[in-house]
Length: 164
Image (cartoon, rainbow, N blue to C red; front, side):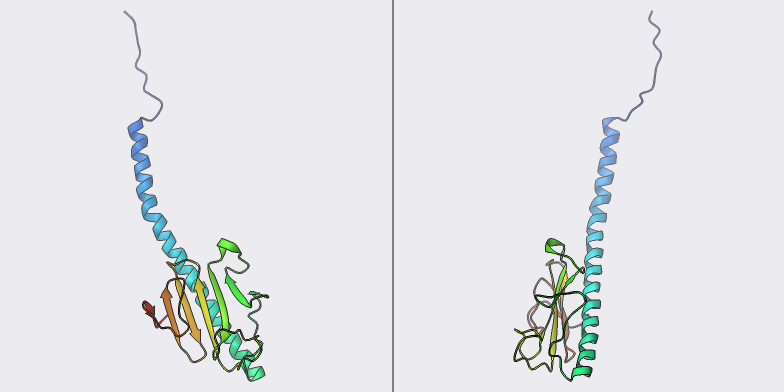
């Protein structure tokens, strides 16, 4: 008779591995969307902070110059367009928000354009992600947000909320 000793296996069975994979997949299915919501909320908060900073700088500029003409969004502005991108210095697909400061009387022009009145302003932060909020703030105190890539400068349209 052959004398065979029983030796326990030193590995995992396929069933055990499948169970672990299923558990990891369930955890990932819960964690990834939660993280994405958190990241979008953080990006929106950063955009709101930048809008508030720009509004403060605009009022400082007006107190020195009696108008908003030639206001620059420096330090984070793109010199060619006078736009702020968030995160600062981002390019291409890494841009989460594009913030523009426009003349309140003629929103097609920046405060650097010739012939602007320079007595009011509109700040618009457009999200690159349609699932994130876009924001508008103007010198008259109008503020609104919309969960989309676009938002009207006068806060009109569907899905616009008046508080942020």
